[in-house]
Length: 206
Length: 403
Image 1 (tube, helix red, strand yellow):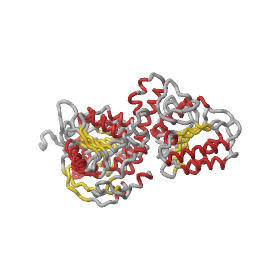
Image 2 (cartoon, helix red, strand yellow; image 1 turned 120 degrees about the vertical axis):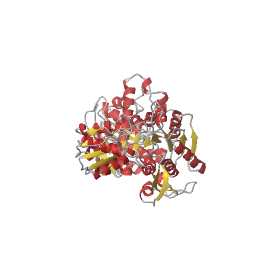
Image 3 (tube, chains in turn yellow, green; image 1 turned 45 degrees about the vertical axis):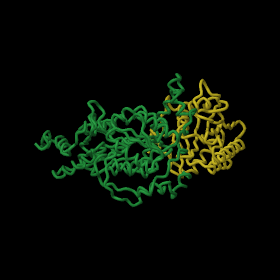
Image 4 (spheres, chains in turn purple, orange; image 1 turned 90 degrees about the horizontal axis):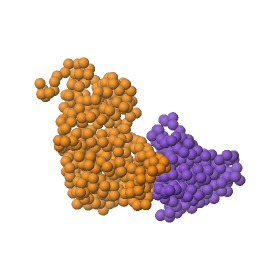
């Protein structure tokens, strides 16, 4: 097993892909935290804890759930809205949950508006501008998610979580695979259960 | 996967049953058949639920390409046509894969080289196209004979590269190859190579799966990038590339993109081990002498080992099945006891020996040879002679074959 750990950055001018450092994706029914395979239950607990600790916990929904291209996508979008509402109910004063979409993957020059969107080609701009210290990717195509997660790890100290509909993401600090409506709701339930038990960080991390 | 699982057990228009691939490959009855490698490619494609095959003639893959045309006429392939050149074929393969099709093509030698620009593009665009490479000479003066030099050029494209030893490997790996390369965490093209003529034009007994079973269809909605969308990467970036934007962000994005391609090659390791039962096969690796080879050089190595046993020299064998992903840890483990590692190859540069030297400790143990190239055969006796010479044993000249 690799000694490498997937940790918040800033890691390097050009951080390596975690897979090239020997980090392996979880099998069905498993998750990973910092590149170490763990149970899904432990991952839900840690994801909820990280969200409740963060000063600016942020959900980044991608095109796969932003557009109602099939019934499942529409249901996932509703679940993500529920997750965001739950987060807002459970944080303490001073914490600022955000929901910022990744509507598409087009490179946008000279720059995006980081107030309203995140782009996989320069995700660090949105992280820096909003002082986001914990984020979750959901509904982003796997290649684009890994692109973003690596750039975020390279240049920011943001804690990254990826809920993937496929095999998961080793470039996130925490990843749950085979994401369904039920799994999104389960994360919301875990946040609700841990409400008031986690002390938020006072200083922003950037 | 719910959508794909739901078609298992149903029938396609030819009456073939979409079958769980693991059951089809490992549990279904097999029928021994006496076929050429080219015919085996056709039989694998019959069972592959392939949407598009694009052909262009170049020896020694032309026969396989033509036979797949027959499959199209029989209704087993969704679409089949000839491109204007190998470059055109590979570009058309990309277009088909962008559109969500399971794509297959075949090429060889100069055709591989002519189309080379497309291969990093396929990998960068995460297109799980399967390309058979029936290796032959690539340099002037012209040779159509077996030579594996073109594989060296494929190793750094970002494609998966496997090297089949036999027609049986070919049959199984064509079908299993789609299972690996279409995994969403991999989703890369596969160059499935063999040594031209030695495999394509010789007959062998190959155990075939039932013809009324076929792979489940490709599900493009599991792709890690969107299907064809002119405004989204990767298509957008091919016409509006990062290199046109001179700023740190665009360079960093492109760097991260490249890393992701090679991360996907790494992720294929787990799936390749699952489907191929390991990235290498080994025999007697506790011996002081180990032959490490890929393709038909494995067969010649195996015969050399038999000849050496007759003379009381014990020798192990490592068959390298996948070149990308590269089985570095497996080769290091398999050769840890070896005092001498011999790497017979059908090419002039010895690219496999270079890879092995870069992977094992005490690389002076690696003997890069024997080499043949340009279409020469590799008699097992020259492997025996190379080993005996290195061991300080008396050997005889093979210059006149039997002198």
